[in-house]
Length: 327
Image (cartoon, rainbow, N blue to C red; front, side, top):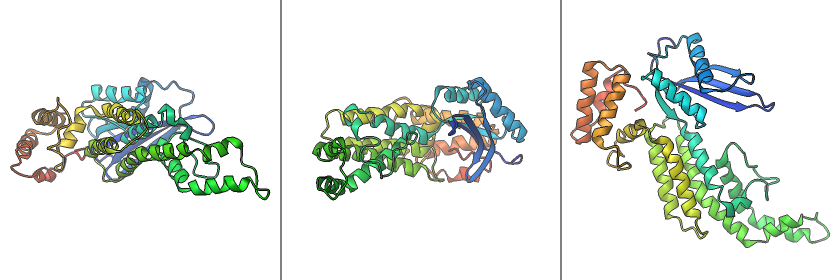
């Protein structure tokens, strides 16, 4: 690892089955993944300062230079994690803070499913022998809804059979759900809104995913849900507001730079603030923080201007060995 550059450091925390606070620390680069450490921090306060100290200590023990080998830091969205990313960038300008986009899209599914009139569609209803809802993976709710939709006729058959002497009695509250036509209609509505989010998460799980794909998927799910005919009052507005809320997690300039540098999207206007010229300026600031020398920075500027003006492709920069893959 000592001779490898352009690492992204990643950290995440969770509780194990015994409620211990477990944290993992990784170094990532394209198809390379290094687990630096997995430790129990139950006896410690999980402040940003403490976790940043642990990251630095683990990098030091792994012979990874934080000033020369690291280009980005990725965490999920809790405030302490956001503070860690911000502190790292303030102390080490070469480290770009990146939000875990899979976590953010998972929270879109959570926010959408919080719509009060549809709360009865969730969790254990009709799902005793189906795929169960997972509290930490909200997008799995779509799988529950899909199986409820798939086995609708079977549910009704079981209810009818339970009223005969040869079959077990089904609880009254379950019978009321199965015989309620609005239940399945609402289930179909929730499923139609969740599926675009699930598809986006599936796309973003690919190893080929870049930061440009985040805006691509956000725009995609927003447009898809906007075009859906939803009969439940205010549910569409609720879902679109959920997407808009999480989109603000990606307001840092790095995401606009990445989207602009994706040839299929450079003409897509998604911000009143980030013009093409301001994106080029931000790109040069990144080049400075990543210690591009004068020749490489000049070449980058030239190619960015040509790219903006559609005079040439951006392929020339692929020949720069130290060109960070985060673009």
